[in-house]
Image 1 (spheres, one colour):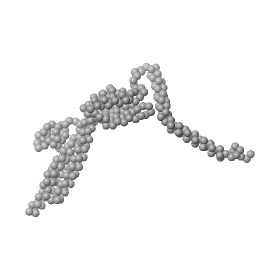
Image 2 (image 1 turned 180 degrees about the vertical axis):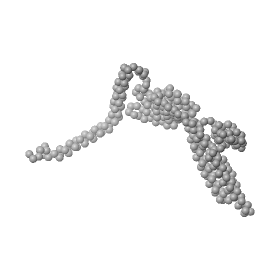
Image 3 (image 1 turned 90 degrees about the vertical axis):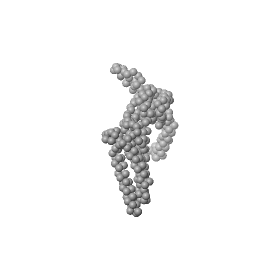
Image 4 (image 1 turned 180 degrees about the horizontal axis):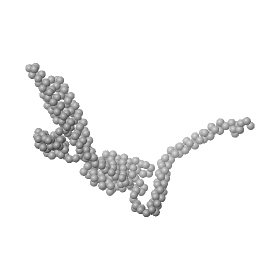
Length: 301
């Protein structure tokens, strides 16, 4: 009887070792996602026992290569406005129409003008339409967008996650069959490690899903006195010289305007500094007078 128990325990441990080795090999080569068509059914390397029930979905609901490419869309826009409140409301209306949301909003004042920075998330399917709508609704001075294909990384994580879940099921089956305490402890340690791997891979996949499902748009809105590029382009030499001269005067006026606004905003501190400077100067003059000898400083007369 003892011999049978020892033989059974040894067989259980051997099965556990083979299981861990098999799952490690499956995790490294991701054979379930092989597109070489080497499987018995000729469909992307799937064996008959693991064939998906429908295209794009495996028998355990995992994502497969048939789901298509996974892409992340991002965009950035710089815009100007002479009516900040109206432009901000227009942007909010466009976001609501696209069924998106603001993940971050910040507004700051620089002198007499306001600046807004907005991070917007919209469904990926509506990204291009939203990009065009913002370009038409605001006075855009700079615009860029990008498309990143993350299919390879995404499906690699999905394959490793499927492997770890299969490994967990087999470990749980072995745990239900274990008899000795040593076997139970060994299997439970393996289960704990596998569950941690599943949680980590699931989090990575959810992060990808979030960025894939919803595109990210950053909008920088600046309030100005006059919109740039609102005048007709000048082609003649005389017109270009005139434009350069008036532009220089306009820039000087803008600098003086900003300086005047800054002085008004900070007049209390400036008055305090002026009073402190005047007091310091008076104190220095008094000390100099005290140090002068009698007779106006003419010694030896």
